[in-house]
Amino acid sequence: MSEAPPTDTVDIDAVRADTPAAAHGVFLDSAGSSLPPRPVVETVIGHLRREEEVGGYRAARERADDVAAVRTSVGRLVGAPPSSIALSDSATRAWCDFFYAVPLSPGDRILISSVEYATNAIAALQRARQTGAVVEVVPSDGSGSIDLAAFEAMMDDRVALVSLVHAPTNSGLLNPVREVADIAHRFGALVVLDACQSVGQSSLDLSRLGVDALSATGRKWLRGPRGTGFLAVAESVLDTLEPRSLDLHSASWTGPDTYTVASDATRFETWEHDVAARLGLGAAVDYLLDLGVDAVEAAVRLRADRLRGALADTAGISVRDPGERRTGIVTFTVDGVDTTAVKDALAARDITVTVSPASSTLLDMTARGLDSVVRASPHYFLTPDQIDEAADACRALVR
Ligand SMILES: Cc1ncc(COP(=O)(O)O)c(C=O)c1O
Picture 1 (tube, rainbow, N blue to C red):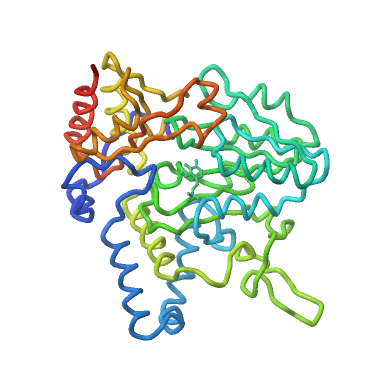
Picture 2: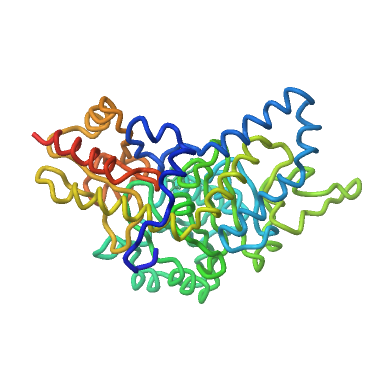
């Protein structure tokens, strides 16, 4: 995120008009599954209605150009050509599609972040078991960010892949990316960026970040439908990686004994997909691009800073966000009150937050001695008064 003091240029009345639920309660879970704006909901429902009328195949044919344009929109969002974009059904699927395509041999090293998301860590452990590769964890520095010096010292030419989490699920940390990519590439390692919690709230550019791939989901900060996500793969590595599974969309059957793999990122897609959801993802990305990613980033940061500041000023509440650069995720605990009890008490006042359990980011939570944290993630459609209402409700929980 940029370091200039943010100013709020999002048209709050317009975005709230597109988000009817924003008026009833305080929704602080865009890091979980956000409130989709009206154009997204209408796009999805409209396509389902058309499927009802003419069947799924004809309905899809009618929207073929629009479905293809989703890759263009996603590409614009992450600074990549449409040929680098594979549309997927989750961040997990997208991340794994890339990760499982990376060849590994016994003794190869996979480096993961100390804030690694459980799914990625489990996949890395599975592949290590299957291939004889080893998984090692890059430590954090005193601020909580990835320790670049320690990382560089760990690197050698046996490192096949580095997995970096941009913004973890369990705190407001934002990790540096370019520095990690540059170091990894000096040793010939690939870098995959888990951008699940940063896409939609931060401006990202694949080539400027310098990573080989990034994965993201639709339902969180992008405000898209559930069951959507995408993978962006740098052109430089695309045709060096063969996905672990192929079908007649990602590859062509060219003869009794032969097939060819798609030359672009559709090699990571499958033929069958939820067309309505995919169109909805496109509508969500276009909605964000219309608002302006920088404007959204500033608006989210203002709201998160406001909430974090109010909580940090409250005796009995501990803000749990490490790092020097922060996202829209605000995590905290209330002394003597179980995190689920905090979530439930806030829910009783129509304030929606979630609890992030240690099992989602085991290494980081164990290192910090935390079982769970309360996670509040305000998007740009929240008013300052709603942020203050949430902070007041948290304060009221302090014993
Ligand atoms: C940092 C991070 N990575 C990956 C994921 C997985 O995303 P999905 O559930 O879309 O597969 C999440 C979900 O919370 C996440 O927070």
